[in-house]
Length: 206
Image 1: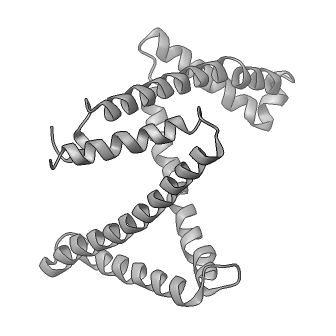
Image 2: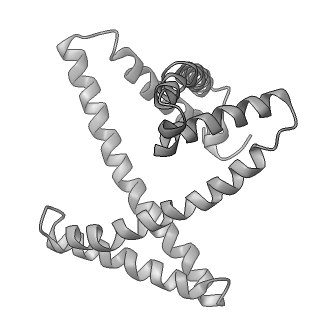
């Protein structure tokens, strides 16, 4: 029963969200709305469990003075500071929570994303090693796009920006849509496997 009950709940919940799009009756929609409210309540408890799990994991590292334990202390202090500020001071515009978010977390987030540019450049350097036809095609396309995106490209050839836009709007967009369609089909097949009980990894095993 430890597995059958969670699987039955998962099946009924998934089926209800699917049927919502095919049965637009107001009474049925009210039932689905109740299910969504229950889901929000469950998500709220999941946040509490997530916070408890973060504290538990970092507490053991701090206690044993493991790797980067001073940063774990900063993480826990900032976590509870933001929770305290949000609960007692509100989260609306002009509050302390809003100020801390836009003047501390937001700049740090931007810094982390800017550091990713160096890793992307390193990965691009390795990817553009022309060893096969596909690699050479990728490298040539990337070079054309990069040249067309900078002012020097238009100085070399005035139609470079137009060529870049064509590459981005036609072959690149077609490939992107193909990947999205494949990802959507994969998500649908995985969802069906979960609903039918063939995929049980979310139960913690198998």
